[in-house]
Image (cartoon, rainbow, N blue to C red; front, side, top):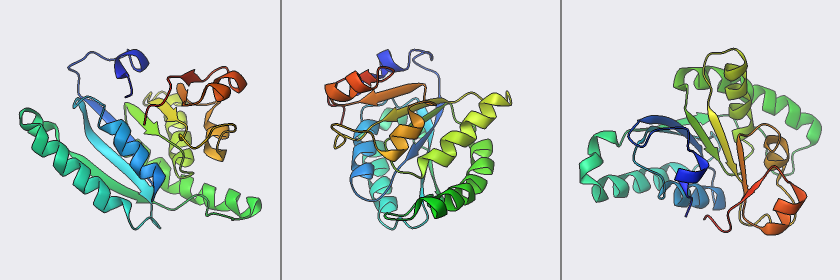
Length: 197
């Protein structure tokens, strides 16, 4: 389980926080929903962002949110969430050259979305679609509009090397969490908490 009291000590326990989560078909969605099951209900409203080509995550998110709502009757007023789609920044096996173009295109969608949401927390775990939104959040921070805490959790399947998203966000995230001790040795800024999903 993710010990949020040690990772995110910046907020009081009863403060309501706006949070953005990234999901993508398959393992990334499963991992992020496991992480979310450990977080406090004070993270509301929750904003889920996923690629417009993702056809499976929406049903999983709706099911997760409904179960959480049913299990926490005292917090029903806090169970607000939105679903937003942005263009996928990179397809599997897409060339590096064209990836730059599609990532910039995704960034154009991400900037107004991030500005509208103004999240307190961005929690992501690997899909490339998270990179443009994290860059958008960094721009908002640099402009003094909003400071979002960016927490990147590298996928459990990344044992020896970081994913491409991880290699990029290692330098920009506030907290970079790895789940294997070898990665902590290679990337000293990272935080090793053992298995969190």
